[in-house]
Length: 113
Ligand code: AMP
Image 1: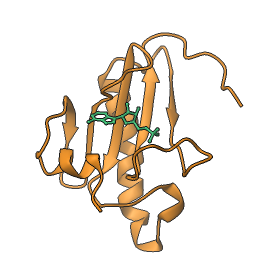
Image 2 (image 1 turned 90 degrees about the horizontal axis):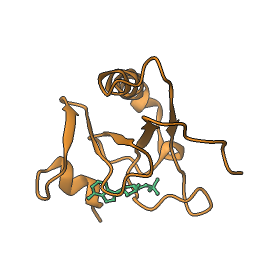
Image 3 (image 1 turned 90 degrees about the vertical axis):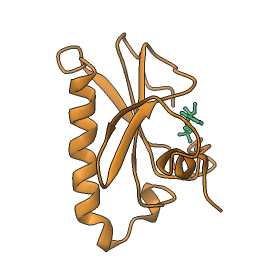
């Protein structure tokens, strides 16, 4: 079953998109936890980081480069930021489509283990 992010990719539901190309998309998190909270996703339906296959290698190289570019475009380069991806139930993943959170614009605090 398709996730909510697939509906955003297909433009079936709106999102505040800050970057898009053939392979990936970045948009504002609907419930921002920090002043800047963006999500970067591959357009390919991949469940999580744990579900990559060797054929995803080039795609993921592209996506990771875009994570940095999107963060820089949001003005986070000098101040720094945090990139998070949650995997599965214990990882706190709510949306079953691989995504990278970019958090910044203010100190994000220590990682809570
Ligand atoms: P995770 O817990 O890592 O799966 O994170 C999912 C994130 O997606 C949460 O931070 C949500 O606030 C965000 N989210 C859920 N639905 C939407 C939506 N329609 N547009 C933007 N962000 C969303």
